[in-house]
Image (cartoon, rainbow, N blue to C red; front, side, top):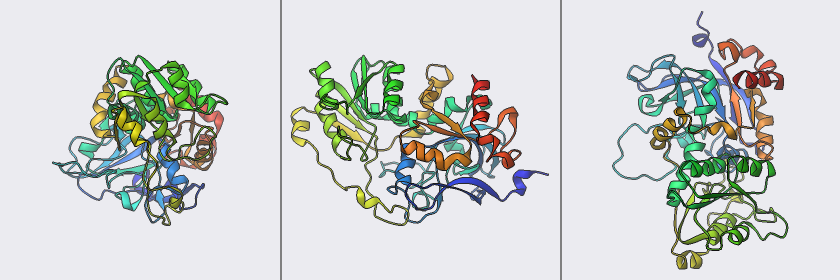
Length: 413
């Protein structure tokens, strides 16, 4: 008997509106709703920094609960009658924001109203931190990859963070040979720095205060800057001592939850430091989130975020700087990044610090929030080709245990 058709529920990570808590629940499996849909069985999903904004009660829809997550790789298990490009069994990337289903002749306000893992106000698509996810307009949304489960982590980050880091460089106006300062050494910041190195930056500085993250930045060839180091004067002061004229490009991969050199919340700190460190005629790219939402059941702490921040407009003007911000064009960037991964030129999986089963989600979110993890991946496809359905009974025990995942990593490497 086909267990996929019999089971009506699935395990999923669920936001219930309680700050600093994340639950794992049985929720209804997604079903085909439109002829252009596909249902994907998730094999790997990740926690993103945007998920932490939800975890802290700042970002998402007004009415919880909803299933979390917007980064995933998986296998197509069902397609709608109008889906032509993909078939059952295809392994695919699930981009965070699927195609909107029509040709847009003008730019639209972002973020789009269609995004996985943010609830009803963002398209009600369901989340990717679950055993299954529905993808609308599948022919134009999904991206086919090799039929090898060991390659999940090579492709997973094309669904969001690799593309977002790459886009931040584009927003800054980067050109080959220039010097770059990247604020934030989380996954997006590290992949922004990685993108700069791939694209021929002459020097890349990465700014953070977490030693493990700075060590990771150094491991890929970037120059780490601890902006909170005692007596060093902050990020810009340290870089300007090395680069008196500044750097041509500055990239904000942090957003409104940034802290100053005393590690106290100061939402304008990164923007101000970016203006200081940018050279005359340079540019600033911003992909860190600056999105003020109303207080609601889904965003109970939204009033802790200011709608406006201080900006050093005089310095910005006098230095003839430019700045661009927004969400990344994930679908537009994937073809380029896909070729880099396929060729072996890019290996973005270096940002992963932990792989766990979905039942470990509450602990994984806590560790991620405390900066004890840099990128956590939930794995749904067990070794030996065993499906999520076949192993669901063991998911909360052996599949989530450190010993299991040590074996998985050992076998993969």
